[in-house]
Amino acid sequence: MTGATHLLTGSLIYVFMRGNKLLSPVFALGSHFLLDAIPHFDNSAWNFPLGFLAILFLLLTTKRTGDPFILISALFGILPDVNHIVIFNETMLDLHQVAHFKKTFEIPIDFLYTEMYACLAACYLIWTRYPAKVLH
Image 1: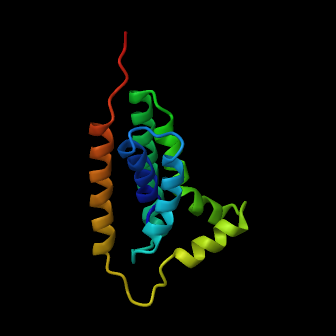
Image 2: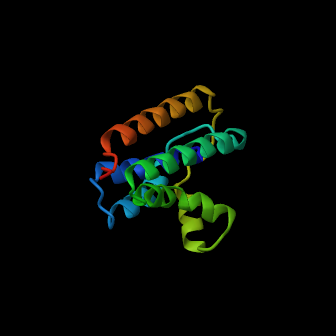
């Protein structure tokens, strides 16, 4: 999955758990392994621009809501990929390798388009389901 998918899923979990600051990062981390088990189109060329847009969206949402846990849960959602680049936990790296689907067939680019539409839907849900902070 793209980094954007993991980031937005982590935040969406926080939003749907109604701001549970204790459990949502744990579920966001777990979601990474579940999502990576699904066959998906892996292409790093798409990862950086989509990830940048997702981070920008999450920063704007965090500013709008005043709740940093939207971003914290997102970071937990992408943590195994960060660990894959900058190895700080061998157990997580091993678990990530086991959970990731094994590419045994050509993945059509349509899978990436579906993933991008899911990211747009996640953005919509995050933006509309979490209230903006009230300014007095």
